[in-house]
Image (cartoon, rainbow, N blue to C red; front, side, top):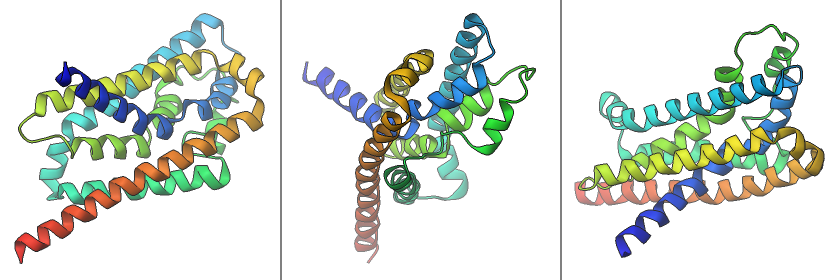
Length: 222
């Protein structure tokens, strides 16, 4: 039972780390802009595909994370510090401006002016909205923390966290029009700032963990 509780705890930690970065609430205006002229069935299909594509992207980076580290000679501590810095920059932006990487951009809004575009699920919904640099950095950071003697359980925990997070994103995006009416622009902005604060805390933890490993490595090397 204690093993199961430990697994559930770490899954929750992964969800808590990725969800504020993904911040599906900030993608709500983009979904409204891009799918306003679609039928309900087509809008549902595009959101479902976007979530599927985002899952493929994040899980691919998770599984290929160790290969990337080995190919470029990057240390695990380096991955944690770099991931933490990316997440810190994103969190500070969300905290002080109320915007993040998944919010509407000029290119994304321009895409809404072309309703004949066949598929918006991959770009911009899946990338960069749901699986942008911040989410990828978080996944790589978590992959660097998988114990060497428990790789299967470690990957299982992170994959479960990714899928649960994307399940939440699917629920939010599927309710985009209702959420926009209920919260309004100021409500979405306030929640984005709260998530920015959480991200900043998570980023500091990643950076501190990486620096601690660097210091340990130097001490052993000395």
